[in-house]
Length: 231
Image (cartoon, rainbow, N blue to C red; front, top):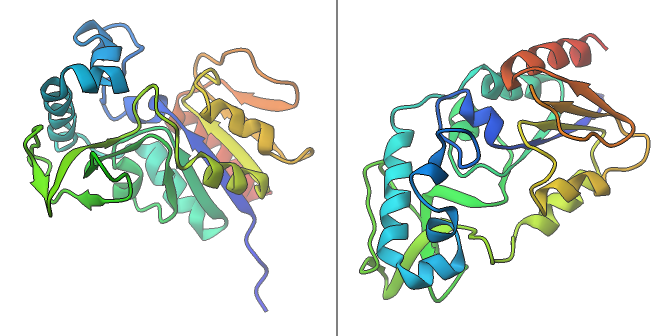
C-alpha cells in the first residue's frame, strides 16, 4: 500500500516568469513604461479602447513563442515525483504547463485562451502564438475578448485556490510581493503549523512563521527542493 503524497501548494507570481525573459509591469523598464497599466489591464480600459487591449494581449501572446520555461518551472514539475503539487499562479503565460506541471490554477486568466464578452463561461483555446484577435472576433455568435482577469473584475478562481491552500501540507510563495490581492491573502487560508516558504530575491515584509529564501526562483527552488526531498 503506497502512502499518500504530501500536498505541496505553490503560489507563483511574476518573478518566476521574469527569469524566462517575460517583461513585468512593475519592474524598471517594464510594461507600464510602454503602456499605462489601467489602459490595457482594467475593465474601464477595455470599455474605452478594446482594440488597444486586444492588440496588447496579441503582443504578449506572440512574445511567448520566444521564451522557454526556466529551471524553476522544471523543478516544480520534478517535485511531482514526491509531492502532490498544485501551482496557483498569478501569471497568464503557459510556462508552468510547458514545463510539465499537471495541476495549475490560473488566478488571472490565460494568454492562450479567449472568452465571450457576454458569457464568462464561454472560453476557447487559441492554437498558435500568432493567433490574433480584435473587437470584431466572433466565435459561435459571441464577440470575444482576452481571457484575462482585468483590474476592477472579480477573480473567479480565487475560491478554488483558497480551498486548495486550506489543505496544503507545505505552502510555497515564489516571485510575488505579498502585496497583490487577493492572491496575497491565500496565506490566510493555510492551516496553523503548516510550513510556509517565501522565495524572492528582495522579500517584502514577511509574516511571522514564514521561512524566507532570499534567492531567485530557480536558485531558491533548488535549495528548497533539496531540503524537502532530503526530509
